[in-house]
Length: 505
Ligand SMILES: Nc1ncnc2c1ncn2[C@@H]1O[C@H](COP(=O)(O)OP(=O)(O)O)[C@@H](O)[C@H]1O
Ligand SMILES: [Mg+2]
Image (cartoon, rainbow, N blue to C red; front, side, top):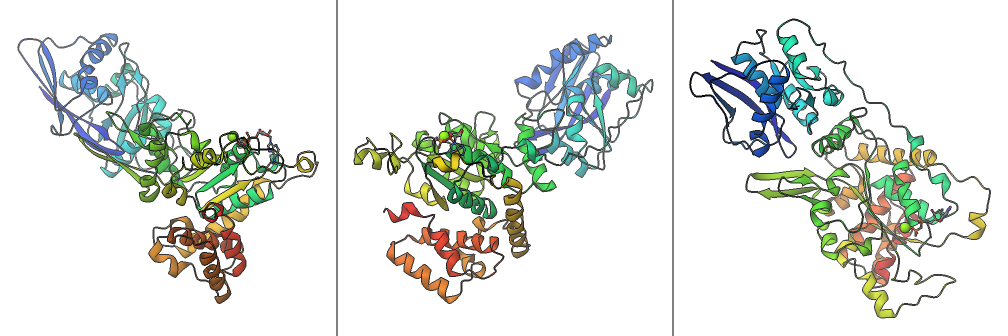
C-alpha cells in the first residue's frame, strides 16, 4: 500500500517542500526511513510508534518503508513527524478523508501530543506560494502561521484530533487570521528619564534618524548604558514586511512566544562581552543566526565594547558592510540577513577617567592608547558618530525640569525617515547611512559655503576618505531633520563634531 503526504523542511531561512512517501508491504516487520534523514529524523520511528500506540492504533506488522523526497536534500529535526504519522494512517486506511492540498508540520511526542517546532513562518510563506490549501501545525505555532493570509491553518494538539478530523468524526476549524497588535511604546524605557545630556541625546537622535552606527565614549556612570537602552524608543515602528523578515530569523532560532509570535518592535540585542564569534555573527554545526541577524532591522548594542575579544569584534566588519552573513557547510551555504544599527559604549581608558573634568586618570599614556586601540581603526571608521558623553551635571540631576519625551523625538526621527524613503524610492537604500560612496554626490548636495567648510575641516584635521564620507552622510541626516534638501554649512559643522577620534590621529 502506497501513500504520499506533503510536509515542509527548512535549510537556514529557506523552506523547501518535502513529500513523505510510504510503502507498506507484506514481509518481515521493519520500519525504515530513507532520504537523507539526520539522527533526529531517524528517531521519529520511536516517537511515532509510541504516538500511534497512545492513539490506540497498532503499528502494522509488515515492512514499512518511508522515503523523504527529494532524496538528495538533507532533512533535519523532528518537523516531519506529523506527516510521517499521517502517511502511516493513510497507508493503513485508518483514515479515509482526502489529504490532497494539505501539508503537515510538527513534532510528535510519545504520548501522542503534538509539540511546537521552529521556523513555522518561513515554511508557511512557502506553503502559500506552493498553493497548499490547508496547513496543519502544532497548536503553539498556530498564531505564528495564521499571520499569513490565503491558507487555512489548523492548530493540532494531538494525534487523536488528526485522526478524528480525517475520519470525518470531528472536524477542526481553521484558525482566524492573526493581526499582530501595534507596538506599545510605553513599555519601552524613555529618554525623559535622562536628565540633561543634550549633546548626547541630539547625537543619538541623528543616529536614529539616519540609521547611523554610533559609539558612546565616557567615564563610568556618565549614562552611556542608560542612553543606549533608550534608543528603541525613538526608532520608527517596523513596517509589516520588516516585521516578517525579522520574525523569520527569530522563528528559526526558536525565540518566539506562542502568545505574541510576531516581532513588532525593532529588536534590541545586547550580547555580553564574553560572546563567541559564532554567537555574534552566526555559526555552529547546524548554522544558527548570530546576534547580528537577531538584530536585523533593529539595534545591536555592544556595551563595554573594548572588553570584547578583539578578533570577535573584527568579525563584525564584514556583516556591517554586506548586511548579511554567509556560512558554508558541507550540506550547503546559508545566508542570514543582518541590517542593523550598531551602538557601542566604552570608557576612554582602563580606569575610566581619562579626560574627566574633575577626576584624575591614573592610567599611563601607553595604557590609554592601548585601550583605545582595542577597537581597530577600520572598525572605528564604521561608526559614523563618535559621541563623547560628559558626566551628568549635578544641576541637571537635581533639577525638576521635565525632559523631552521619546515620543517627541520619535516624531522628528520619523519625519526625517519619511524624507529618506521618498528620496531613495526604488533604489533599495532605506536610510542615509546606507548610501554607497559612489552615490554620495547624487544624494548629498551641498551649497558652496557648506562645501568650502567641509574642504577646510578635511584639511585641518587631515581626515581619511572614509571619515569624509561619514561626515557627509551624517550631514545629510542633519539636513533631513532640518527639512532641508540642500546640505548647509551648519549641517556640516555639526556633523564634524562627531568625528572626535579622527581629530586625535
Ligand atoms: N543624565 C542622567 N540622568 C539621570 N540619571 C542618570 C544620568 N546619568 C547617569 N544616571 C544614573 O547613573 C546610573 C549609571 O549610568 P550608566 O548608564 O550605567 O552609566 P555608564 O554606562 O556610562 O557607566 C544610571 O542608571 C542612572 O541611574
Ligand atoms: Mg555602562
